[in-house]
Every structure is written in structure tokens, then in C-alpha cells.
Amino acid sequence: MKPLILPFHGKSPTIDPSAFIAPGAVIIGDVHIGPDASVWYGCVLRADTHRIEIGARSNVQDGTICHVDDEARNGTPVIIGDDVLVGHKCMLHGCTIESGGFVGMSATVLDGAVVETGAFLGAGAFLGPRKKVPAGELWAGMPARKLRDLKPGEDKMALMGAAFYVEEARQHREAIEAAGLSN
Image 1 (cartoon, one colour):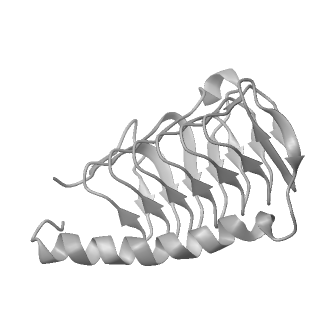
Image 2 (cartoon, helix red, strand yellow):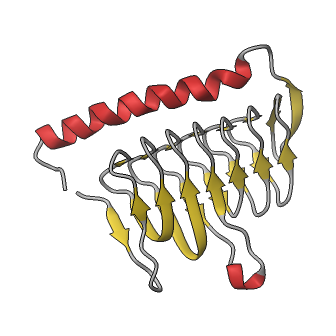
């Protein structure tokens, strides 16, 4: 099973050759994926009414959905900076995760919301429209609210995790090629 990479309304996904797109991922429309980024099994990135950008070395983990709010109605794109970790089964809609940000498993981030550089949104959290998780803070809950300041060094965990996922993606690419399932 190969990833589905589909142009839509005259806009085609652009994917850096070093990026890993897992079999079963769906990438539609105005999507831009940077160097050494990874989009994992079962993800859907649907940029049919605005754009989605995934920065260098960032990873969007299994089962995550990224969608956008209509640009014609002043909607917002999904912007994921460099060295970002997006956990399994997240919902990102018209939001920004700045470089070095972290979004825990099953979290939801809605239109206009921002997770700043070095900020953490905990697993299962719900970050509503136009909310902001400031750098150096851990937010969690439904709705998400500040739990505490990050301890020294915790703000660098996303960078370490991003480096791990670059290597993990390389190993998965090799396994897929060895199984004869590559593009």
C-alpha cells in the first residue's frame, strides 16, 4: 500500500525527497513537506481550501489528521515548524505549531491556536480556537490550561524526539524497500 498523494484544485503536494511518507498516508492539495520530515501510517493531510506546511525534521505521527480553514473566508493554514513532534492520533485544524513545539497523543488544536517554540500541549488536550500555549509552559486538559512551567531542559525534548524520528523514518523506509513495497 503506497501513500495517496493527490493534486487538488490545481495545487499539488511538494515533498522533499528526504522526507518519509508512510504507506497509507493521504496527502491532498497544497501541502509542503520539508527535509527529513515524516508523515506516518494512517495520517491524512487535506489542504483543499488552504495550505499545510510541515517543516524540516518534524514528524506527524500515526493516525493524525491535519485540515485547514477556508482561505476565502479568512481561514487559517496548518503550519508546523521545524523539529516539531505531533503525537499519534492528533487533530490539527488551521493552527500553528512553532519550531520545537510538542503536541501530545490524541490532542486537538483548533483554528488560529498556537503552540509556541519550546511549549508542550499534553496528551488528550483540547486547545480551542485562537488560544496560545506560551514557550516554556505545559498545558493539558479539556479545555487546555496551564499546568506548570517546564523544567530546565524539558523544552528541548521535542528537538531530541525529532532527531529520533529522522532515524526511525530511515529504518522504516529501508524495511518498506526490503519488503518490495516502495514507490
